[in-house]
Structures are given as C-alpha cells and as structure tokens.
Image 1 (tube, one colour):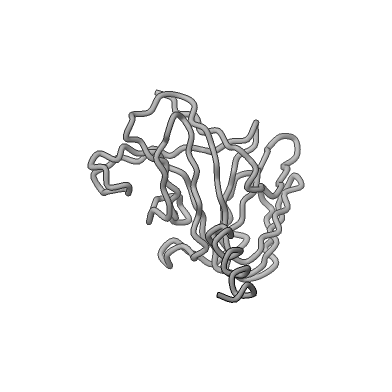
Image 2 (spheres, rainbow, N blue to C red):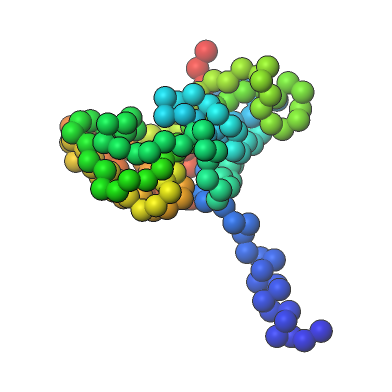
Length: 189
C-alpha cells in the first residue's frame, strides 16, 4: 500500500469522533450502582424532551460526549429578548439576531433495565453542573448571536452547541467553558 495513503488514514483513526462538546465531571453524594447522568434537550420551560447523551456514573465520575446535531424541533424556540430565561439573565435583555435556540440540562436516573438509556418509567432528577461557584450552561443556537443583559451579562454564541460558565454576584460573569473543565454534580437526599 502506498505510504501517502497510509498517513491520512492513520491520522483519521487518531482523530476524536466529531462532537460538539465533552463534559467531564464528578458526582458528590451517593448514587445507585446503575445510575446514569443524561444530557436532555429541554423545552424553554426546562421540561425534558429527549435524551441526547448519557453515561454511567462510574466510581463517582462521568464523561458525556455531546453529539453535534441540533436538538429536536420541539425543544427549540425563537430566541427573543422576552423569552431568555438563562442563568444570570436579568432584564433588560437584548438579542442581536433572530435565531432558533435550545438548551441542554442534566438529569440523573437509575437505569433499572440496564439498556443504557432513559425509559419513561425511570424517574429523572435534575442536577446542576458547577465549577466552583459558576454554573455550566449549555445552549444551542441555529446561527451566531449575542445576548446581553443587566449586571454585565454578555454571551456570544456560535452556531451549534455552546458551553458557558455563569457566575452571579454583584455582576454576572459569563465565560466560555472548555473541554478541560471538570464539573461537579451534587446529589443530596
């Protein structure tokens, strides 16, 4: 076989699978051995619509590789200054472009039948991934857009999935999260 053909093939095999984002984390608190953490597309009101990704909680750790695909249509809404209910957003809100938007939230559940996905009879418990005092927030947008709000809130989103750490205090700090960030999910009884 030609060496010029082998090099691109080897590089292709070493490349990571395409995903929008990887979320790594630890779970504080006790969970059942069959527990999974799932990333769900949610309605604008936060109701889970569809599990997009999930992973077993193994020795208190998990890793979620989000797909690059858009959330289902029923989990999307037109983003306007009147319907932004994101962490840290306080009126007045400005959105500089009309786009479709969605959001991913995290839930823990017991995979009672071991099929590695959520079933309707498995109760969901919403959890907030944190980095220190900042909340991990994962929105999806159909096109580039900037959202600004009171107390210094500014989020510049690129088309597709985005990940931000939002810290609320006297001001609101929004910074882009990287795949290197380790989140903590607290499970309390």
